[in-house]
Image (cartoon, rainbow over all chains, first blue to last red; front, side, top):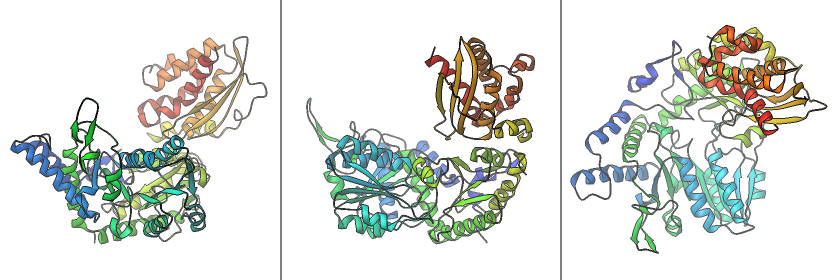
Length: 406
Length: 142
């Protein structure tokens, strides 16, 4: 019997269109437990001041909230040092930071960047831009029939010309887990750095950057119970130290004269302007909550829900599933209903209290590769229940009738 | 709520093949696209002496965007450009909830059946895609 997490998430006890809310769009963003909301309120209610600047006590308190969270994040992903944790607004900003700072200063004409066809636009568009700016080539690893990365493609395309391998640890469309540890070893063998998009992995599975030997890891707070607007970039200190700043301005400087500036040490070098300390307070409470639940329990629940959803959807003859036959699957079920566009499916499910995502999921090249224009995606988190899955399945069964296709 | 949106009329128009073709003598072709959801159409018009002699489309999208495109073509075929622009404006005003009077909307003919989309903000873009694409056709090719 699962703990009743709904007690901690008031929003999950609300209704949508007069039905109990079945919130199945967790890959887009997760709901926030009361402890996270309280933590944000507590920060603004009792600790708010500009961090790092004031000598007065309140500013010290704010600084402590921020820097304690940094240490907590470092421990959470097993970084060697808190200096390797840069706060950003989300994974997108983290990946842009790597592309613009590391990419622009390390790529030469003729160099290659290798990404996969399953990347979210946030780990794709920045690489297109820096590749074009530097005359580098952007190559893609494609997928095998089960949706996993083609090993043959990796071995053929990861060469000494490859300077950057950027890969998601879990695809936001197919939910398949990539073996980042092996990829990191292969990238290092040819002298490339590996940039890992952890947006879909850090909230769901234990991620240890030292064990993976990742050079960079990006993730968003809002996909792991935290407020929107706080994200993380992990980078190995040696690499971050050698990189130029990304955004510049207040708080990231050492000395500024009329014509010259020297920059602060890590991590401040990459954190220009007043930072989202309230967001950090929320992230800190979110990490506490996740560690209290435990990743074993999170995996057990998500695996149960995913298996149930896939087996029930497979029983419906007009449902097509994508990437649902591979074993390395986490929490995401992507499907289509024959002759019905995903947006119409989402509208019909919405009317029955079921929130799913429909569209291209910010992965247009992957959609094209799969030969579809759009798909429906149900994505789970540990607070979902078997009843949510049943509500999804019941609603899916009504879709063709509503569309006069039954 | 759903039965007011996914009516049989809309289902019919979304599946109709009649206006889904390529024009032999198109004078204007314009692509319309909702980047956030992927609905995509190419609208073709054959215009001479200020009159829309024929229209057709190709593309992919939800039932609402496809039905709306099909209905628009039925409505605008044979109209003068000025008349068509006025009707497109009327349709867009209807979807945005600015005009609700059924008598006023009667001249939209079957396209008036999409009136209820005005209560579904998430689907407004689907319903208006074809009509905005038409407006682009006539503003870019005056």
